[in-house]
Length: 482
Image 1 (tube, rainbow, N blue to C red):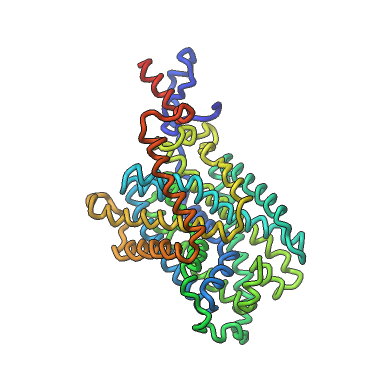
Image 2 (tube, rainbow, N blue to C red):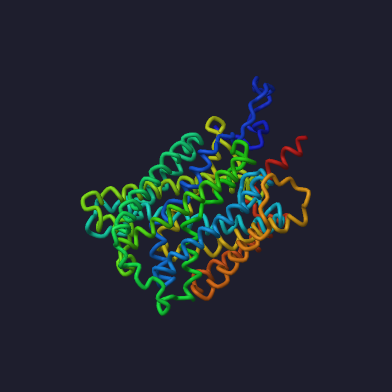
């Protein structure tokens, strides 16, 4: 464990009493406040605008049934995401701890429910979510090489593995460089969106409106598929909560967190709505549904030779989402370990680099990307993600009554978290009817968190290998010496 230290800033137990520097004062080893307003906006915007806007249009159109209804879903998902983001802004300024969903559920409902959230995130949500974004990265980065032919699936997954490994390396090396690269990638994303929006809107104003005729044709609307359409839309907007995972590293969080969230959501909603209008201006509904890479099909129809550049920009966009996602989620495992619900090694920080290196490296993602396709992973992950986000926002309402004296520098009207949480639960339970297999698997996985909690956390006689990992033996030895 050379080069690592406990996050609490305790004296390293590996130092011997004979070390002449043992008694010297040491700088506390902790995560530093390096996330400014601009970096916060880049984390949120850079994570939201990624694979979603290039994957979800197909899923939303397929499950909503019409061009008009798909645009309604996009706008509705943007408003709902804003409601969720505002709720998390209150939680983030009231509870100034990193960890996001996990921390808020822990504060509101205690360790059992928080452990279940962390458990499903560790074995399902995080690997599936990263796999979805990474698979999109792998497909788009190889499109210029294989055009006009299709990209072999094995090539996509190999490119995906390389991309994920690169992101893990970057996040383990430097917080500052991770944030700087995220800012650069965020501007690359906005440039990509502009390349799509500007020519599409130009054609729309020139009178290219044939694809919007009969946009709300009633007999094509699929009410049973709307929950899955909302899943695709909410996935595209997902990322507004990631700044809350790094609250302890944010400068002046009372001001920065709500401001960064609100600015980011306005930018993203405008970009997404205009991008979909541009898509439908250039492509018919049938062409969009037949495409495996919507942005590439758009570019091929409109830009000729320049179309080769579009998938490269899209791949950069997906890489930025992977980077922001890993940066944020690793902090949840870091906090869960600090709370004693994960092996202690995950709460260790590199002494020189000040990164939670063990929490960053997570190999299950590399395994799960070889097991499923993008849309089955999306439905499977979304059920679990929105179930527990709904629980976290219910926790906000619950703490308004159980902890009325808690400082709340930023406070939202109660109807905002109420509408958002009810919508989350409505989507979750209706999806059991729309896609019973994937959502049923997700529900079963969430239930495994109950026995896991009693085996690994509650029971005193834990497996020896877990005691070793969690550092309990080390603690007992230190107590005996004392």
